[in-house]
Length: 100
Image (cartoon, rainbow, N blue to C red; front, side):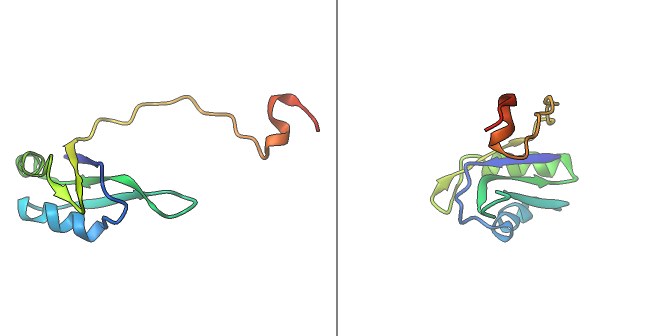
């Protein structure tokens, strides 16, 4: 099961999340998402646990727990929704077909 973990402090690390979830069972992966430009945490992560029962126990125990001063949210991750592709521009001068 893939678990969404939200409202994380920017100081929270992958290792801290592993330490919180490991007592409940086997972890397949821990992915703390970071901003591409600043490499700073985006405040959420995904934890994958192969055993459904262990994952549900982890969610029940950790949802609402305080980690690094923040009350985290833990829930089964929803499938990613398909979004329409956004047009890409190389710079702001070419948007709206204007030439400067």
